[in-house]
Length: 63
Image (cartoon, rainbow, N blue to C red):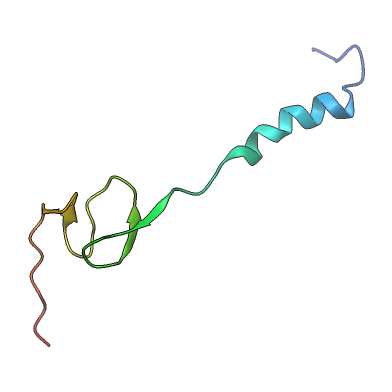
C-alpha cells in the first residue's frame, strides 16, 4: 500500500484545494426586448428573441 514519505505542507495542501474556489456563476444579462435575465448568447426563454430578431414565436396567453 502506498504511504506518503513526508508530511504534505499546508501550502501544498491548500494549493491543491484552491482549484474548487475558482468556479464562478454564469454571466446573466438583461434581454433588450423584454428585460428578463437570461444566460449570455442564448435565446430568451420569455420572449424568444436573440440578437434583435425573433427566433422562437411565443404566443401571448389570454387571461
